[in-house]
Length: 290
Image (cartoon, rainbow, N blue to C red; front, side, top):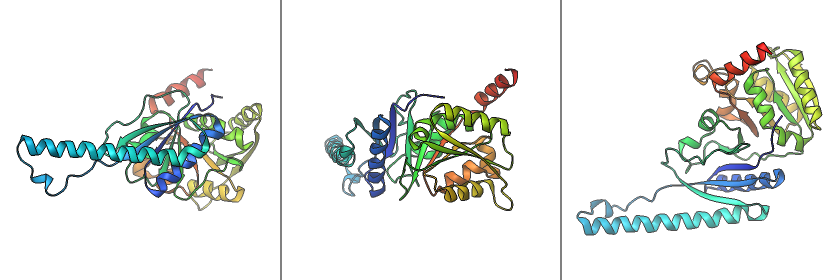
């Protein structure tokens, strides 16, 4: 199983929740010995009512110059807020302003990237940086920290396991966090995975100095998502790790599913990883012939 996490990409802004998320991301970067990129959401300054009536090249030039100056001031203020929010962690931080109407604000991907986002999405962040859009489109794991929730890496980790390529990817991507916690429970709900695959994951975690426990439960009258959440509370888990959209995102939007449920309202820290359908099918056939 993989790699360290060399770079954390935090989707933050100047709201109180955004500043809290920036501090949490910087602290996580310190604990994982990672670099931090702060994608800082900014709203474009709106023209005043008088400026909307500007006509002619001279007045229009003045309006444009005013907007440029206002934008520069907003960016400088956000940079100072970033430095104040992250400075105490003592990590290298790259400040990167992102406008709220940006269509493609993601930095070039690096192996081991981990995205950190809030839930719900912060007010000045573009839709492209929502947890769901990042999960499906970035090819990188997404750590969701709901409003008011804190990530405590000294508490146990709960891995929702169904044996899928997405679940396998999530366990791999979460390894730096799992190793820091030192223990993990591998939870199989409603016989979603074979005992052998759960034991294989447990053996791999043991090789990485993690103390694993395999647990199988039945959901009964509850949903799978409700069962996972209840076990997490029972264990006092500090993090839930799930494969995101093990079946297609379209099907989950129509019929619902575990990923969709947790994305709609996670109550605690949640790490999700997604494997595109074509890749998952390739991995499945490769394992079948191994």
